[in-house]
Length: 71
Figure (cartoon, rainbow, N blue to C red):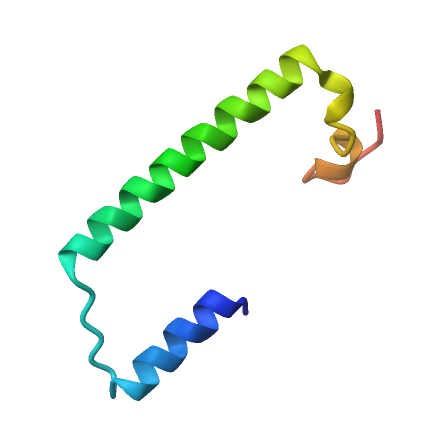
């Protein structure tokens, strides 16, 4: 459990199960998340295209889900 989910759980417990999240907060959070995801994705694509040696942690064998024979 990360710190954010622990904080949310504590907030729910302290509010006796009634947690009211304002609509404006949800809209602002959605806009921030979308902007950050777009920026991170574009930045990663640019680094991968122009400076592929900077992406040193990518290894197909590390991220395969089937754990089959290695290529």
